Length: 249
Image (cartoon, rainbow, N blue to C red):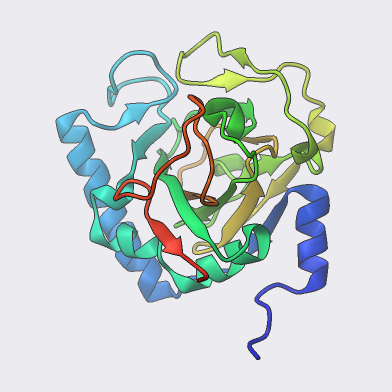
């Protein structure tokens, strides 16, 4: 019988705190391939204007004072990232959290350039998604070494246990935010390149501006179980956009 990927201590930690750091999961040569593909996709997106700057309501400009760049559904643009969403090493861990029937909700690449990388305000993912049941799990992978100063994830342990009211961010329509966060409770999750932070869709999290001379390339995969309903109440069907990644029959 195969051994569980996570031990009981790790599972208990995730249930109690709503997140878990793991890795590095990827090998150096795998990281290098993904970095090259990631950079190529952002170059294309810059040329076509298809990358969204979450820090600004205006179309992405290279001279914008802060840039938090997002490409949605990287797996529909690039074969290497399509393969990554099916990676058994990732799915084995996700299965420990949500069971053996795993669907893709969506993925996104989140890029903070050196010096001018913008913040992502405190939020719970499901405040944007409004999925039911609220049991989605995210895999936040970094292709660079990350610390708090260049945009490592910061979390409030235990905050996944209930939803919290969000306000509209006053700077950009792209972001929600929560007022009155006690940042003394926050934990910064430093990761090596190829490392992953898994977190529940209601875990409060934030990434600071990147003020360092090092870029921060991150890729997030959001997983759900079959039967998950979108904000309109309709159950999401299996299709190319929401493929079945693993199924127990």
